[in-house]
Amino acid sequence: MNRLFVDTAGWMAMADAKDPLHIKSLEVRDGWLEQGGILVTSNYVLDETLTLIRMRIGSEAAAKWCTMISDSPRCNVEWITPERMEKAVQWFFSWRDQSFSFTDCTSFVVMKELGIEDVSTGDRHFSTAGFRIHPVHFEP
Image 1 (cartoon, one colour):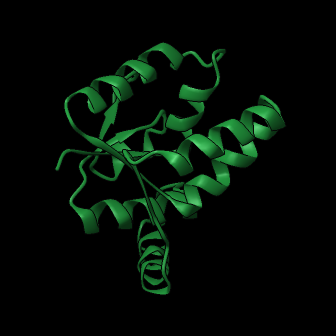
Image 2: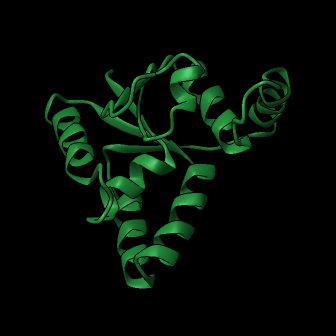
């Protein structure tokens, strides 16, 4: 199955028409889905995204986005279990020379476990961790 992990920056680019990567992010998402792929995210990413959408775009947009994610059969939400959290803690402290957020580390764990190599994000940390970023907008 062709899976694309979507990080907070990816969801925000899709949701916010003012984001510089808005159009490109929608094209990546739509192309992925048209080819039979699915989107994968985590409950930690949903937490960050829902809060950011509410703060930047408003409560109505946040509610609409939350319903869209919840109702979509083409979006899987992976939960950060205690086991995944422990692996993320290990990742977080083993890369002391990087400024990865803890949520990034939980995403890395989910992606590694599921064999996902592609991510919709504007966060270059995913490239540093060895994943392919879509849409690419900087030199990794």
